[in-house]
Amino acid sequence: MPTYKYKTTIKGQVQSGEIEAESEQGAIAKLKQRNISVTSVKKKFESDFLSNKKPITERDIVIFTRQFSTMVDAGLPLVQCLEILGKQADNPSFGEVIMKIKADIESGSNLSDAMRKHPKVFNSLYSNLVEAGEAGGILDTILGRLANYIEKALALKKKVKSAMVYPSAIITVAFVVVAFLMVFVIPTFATMFSGGGAELPGPTALVMGVSDFFRNQWYYIIGGPILFFIIFKKVYSTERGNIEIDRIFLKLPVMGILIRKVSTAKFSRTLGTLLASGVPLIEGMDICARTAGNKIVELAILNAIEAIKEGETVAAPLARENVFPPMVIQMIDVGESAGALDAMLAKIADFYDEEVDTAVEGLTALLEPALMVFLGIVVGFIVVAMYLPIFKMGETV
Image (cartoon, rainbow, N blue to C red):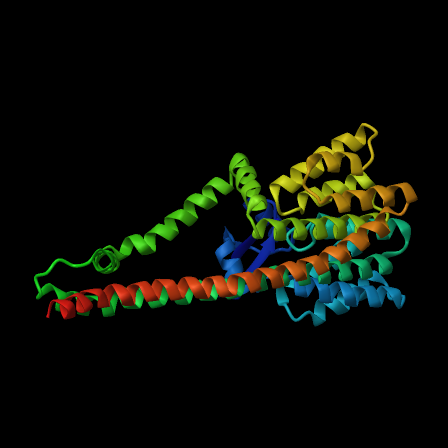
């Protein structure tokens, strides 16, 4: 529910506060029930909220889940566990969410239902697993699995991010070096060559033109990437654009392979964790589709769900979609036949976690020399272009 800020006058002094309500009228009604006479009520905007509260990170959720699992395993009541965790939370925003969940449970709500009221903190995967744990009386075990799952998902995300850090740094340095040369160094040579009156060689004229562009049309250099980002985001937000861009990502030479491996590891880990916790197959695959992170993978899983509803196995429709590697399909088929699909999916996830490690190392090893060679060629071309007129003048003399 939205939060409303209100002001009231008590003994001649103006005091302010906040209250959650469905609407402004609802906020006024709640305050009247508390015998509070308000002078003004207005909705608290998101900007106010963000300025006062820290964002809740996956690390906060991992720590909470691990501690919650330990407390439940030790036999502490849910309300007491949440009371302790809410008060000791390092992130005040997260502590507030935990205390709201505690209040809902005290009002008679289930833990999973209380968590569903905070979808930005506890996603559908989390709340569905908690619901399965509550139904099966194994909440401590489920929370332990959830903590392991989130930790491994975080590790996977860090691996992918680490693969992007070095190339981004090299490209940034290359751009800064080239921009410095174009704005401050090349104009000095241009002044010197302009007095000679001779026709400049092609490479030198090209570099001079680029230098003029950097100095006189710099707003295109800044505005171009910003405009591209805005257009890309706009296109990607559409259904068709999302599908086509994700399809292109999967077809990229090196990055596409990495994306497939990450998607395979994520799908296997998520579905394996859900099935091991007692979540039905169709519901588990639906959650996997919604958390896939790639529209092509999501559509493949959704198509497989429809085929499974008609009586097919899991492996057959996934094989037709041609998204996951053949080895994964074969292992899923074996796991289904043996009645141990959850265990097989866990093995697939472990294997592809290692594959992502290898792919990240390979990508870094490939990009490092390629980017260094590219930077060397660009700077070398600029240097040679600037010295060509000098060599030409020497030959003339």
